[in-house]
Image (cartoon, one colour):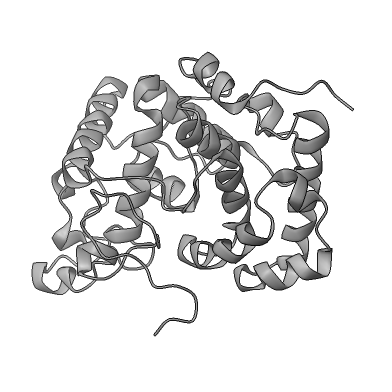
Length: 287
């Protein structure tokens, strides 16, 4: 058994000013023809400022009350929507509120609780493993260091950065499918590997922006800049986007493509922050 870590509260205060380490810098990204790297940096930072005005309420879209719940919810979010995770976790956390409780769970019973999220057998194995590790190696507390988090079963850099940035205030860049897709669409990088994407973006922005930048980009990808049919005609950063025109450019048709609160529909959280302008998501099974 390893040495127990300090409490989450103490750990948070100790690490709050220590950013997650970005991976080693990779090659300079390709930029639109005629655009220098300095111009790319200025354009990228302007996009971030514009997104901050559009989404001043940007936030993690997983419901959680503590670092353990955020860690579990993030692991469950693989290959499914945050909405489906949020609809599933109330029953899960009611049954297993602590790492000690979850580590002692009967696998078949946990599988039934998380079945709606998909890949429930593999996810159950990960949750049982990470809970046991938290119990045995970290005194039942979620660690606040990247190098410790990524050692937990089912936890990679993306999950670790989500926990660090949103539970402990340690800056981190969350490279999910939306983030990677948009930064390539904006020609910030042509890298496909998430670790390399993280390194490129970390070189463009100051550490203080990493966590909120992640939220804003992911919000934009979910609401306006969709994968198959982006709503270009309703996009507030269209003048800064070198890929403008890949989607619907007619303003009226584009507005019909907007999702979540931008389209007048519920968001993904059952318990959104007080400043969220949209409607809470419905519980699992609700009409």
